[in-house]
Length: 171
Image 1 (cartoon, rainbow, N blue to C red):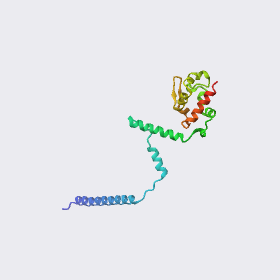
Image 2: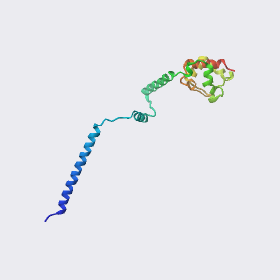
Image 3: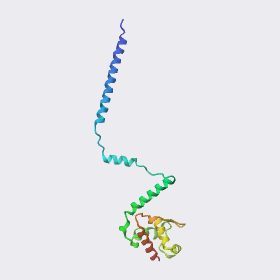
Image 4: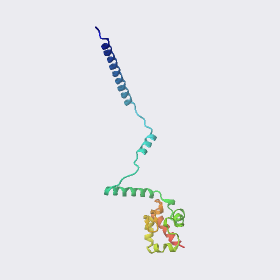
């Protein structure tokens, strides 16, 4: 007596095994062919991916971090210095009109207007102190003076010339 079901299962298993071997052979061949093909990458796409993966910020911790932060600030300052504002002009009137006047004419942010009464206490500190505060920035009780008037591309000479012009033109 023959068991036809058992024979069918044997043949079916052999067919399935053969198909699995063919599939594995095709996968292996495709992998080998794909690995042999040179990949051309679009430079614009590579730049786009690099920009997306760039960190959003940095963390500075401890003395090593403070040194890294100082180096980053110095690099930013050097980059800004390489692009001097207003063509390097030391015309205090022009710099005041284009930058400083926005706050010092309206008194925005607690900035003293060009009036002797508003500047008397500041003038008593000395011109060099005023120039240093204008270059480095200063936060007083009345308001805040951003470093270099908010334009990091101003040189020290430009800031000093503008402060001197302001002192000469107090009303």
